[in-house]
Length: 347
Image 1 (cartoon, helix red, strand yellow):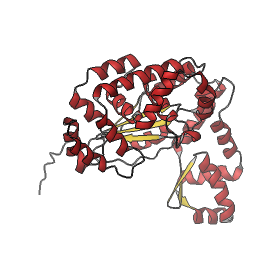
Image 2 (tube, helix red, strand yellow; image 1 turned 30 degrees about the horizontal axis):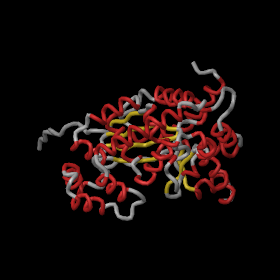
Image 3 (tube, one colour; image 1 turned 90 degrees about the vertical axis):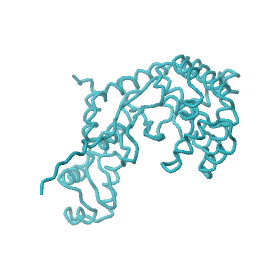
Image 4 (tube, one colour; image 1 turned 120 degrees about the horizontal axis):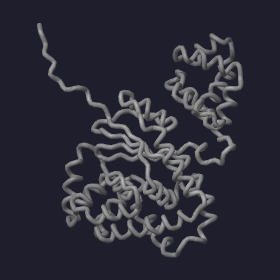
């Protein structure tokens, strides 16, 4: 039997690293107003220290963002705009049609409810529709209330709040001595990953983000990797109907003064500074192995071996899944590059 295969080529996701000052400003607002997690952010102490210098108008605007969780909406809009400045973001915001505005701002729930989301976005005056869509997020930390706030506030009120809080936050942040260094670090991070292997997006996402494990999802055609400082050490993930966003912490080494080694560099060298751990890496580079297999091969107790593997895992040189350890070759290659950059010997 002869078979003619007329199927189109298999499509893969589009992967890109994207950064701009607007992304960092929005993430800063999101982090500052996230009271439940804020104490875990690296920036929290600095924010507390500098709060007295914050203009009263900015304090009021941030309080409104905190009450409504509308930081989420700014992220969804910037995903559409990819604005490189607050002024461009504001310009695009004011020219958006009502249908597009609410379609961009309404969070994605699932494929089954996508038609309801689109219908709701087209009918901002129909409270019943909005209540129905908001109820899909019942129990979520903030999205149920966020959807209701989109309905309660007018389009002009939302646009005014977004524009003013971004401009005020930018004015406050730009006076900080580290702001320009942050922007330089984010730009350098983006330049590092101009060329990505589109044939292996899952491995590339893990390599660029420093360890994020991504499983392809139905209807996701674009993945954006967005380096950030304000949300460190967390990775924030958000998805839309067709895009996945990963806000990953920019490498610590880019934020340090010349000559100061990063904690990651120190931790990695400590992990490698042991004969047994180097032998473990050598074996795992050949093939993945379980704790039992490694224990038998090295004739060492599982307790001792587990401790050594934990140190390698903490340095992200290995990973473990369902009891099987494997090498993280991308991290090892990146670690070697880190040392080269630190020593200033990079060509």
